[in-house]
Picture (cartoon, helix red, strand yellow):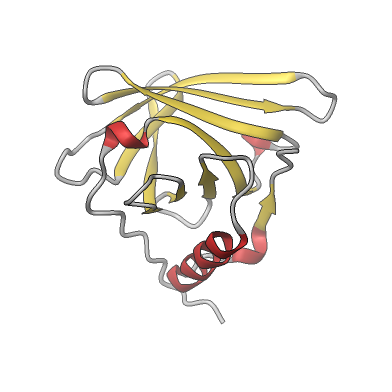
Length: 155
């Protein structure tokens, strides 16, 4: 049974420069803007210490590549796990880094301030099973419905 309260507290210590770079999407809640995409990756580039360039890539079901560029920002340097991202004009969404491998920055779990979004990310296309299970347990403990996750084809 899932609790009605969603735990969206973010990581308290985040080295934003180490978080930058390429991440592979291992799993996600399905939503319109990524519907049917496989081979999804995101690349983050820090621009001036506070603004982030974002490039999302994926392959549509018809085999055509889809690339979307966006931007991110760190609204409060005292709460580094709470970022905001935008792919359309000035409309920003919350991007909450819920978990991160604070030693090597090899995996992360990202959500928002609602239960509509959840991603499991890895620096490699395949996440070790032990890490995958650990992140699923943490997501479940936080109140996320892990049964809604879809597993992204990265092969």
